[in-house]
Length: 267
Image (cartoon, rainbow, N blue to C red; front, side):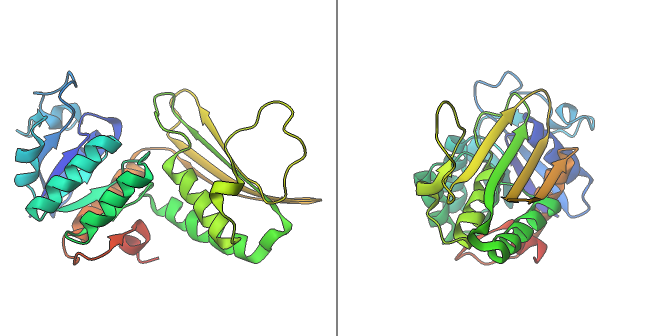
């Protein structure tokens, strides 16, 4: 059995990862980790996940949690992820990272750790979204600079980072496909007299409302027609299943590079 520690265990994604890991024939949840200030510290992780008592208590002792496992599945915060990946690297543990909102510096730390341990990081772990990444790349390369590109994402009202990690990845794919510098052409929302649209702009718009699990649309627009590629997640299980699949996959892989979800899925 592959022993799993789940970081961000009391959160929405953490609970579903615990539930699906507990059901998986190759996985055993051995640790559940969350922030010291979380009022659910000390609760049984299985009860929080709605699967009944599993004898694993939610803890803030990240050193003990990571020591006890073969692989960490991390859906926490950028600061906690950097701490966890450093601890995992020091103990030779594999890690799967689904946390979004990391800075360039923090991503650099993850990349450094990937040279030492099996490490996979993805802003979205669903099969559908990773197919969307591939489709958007194909469409952008096919259409070239003849179409305006806009990205719209929507999530629940408790999501802290914007744009979503998935929308940011989509923008990176489009800008690379069109050979543009995203730092120069990315437009994150519009307000006031912004003037006519620069043809090279890539718009990235964020919606936060209600309990939306996750929606992403990439629009390619020209005079007289529009192509839209959309993915809608109806349940967090779409992401959690991918994370569980990645946890099984990553422990067998060598260190030396930062893996992506498309590697796990063989896309």
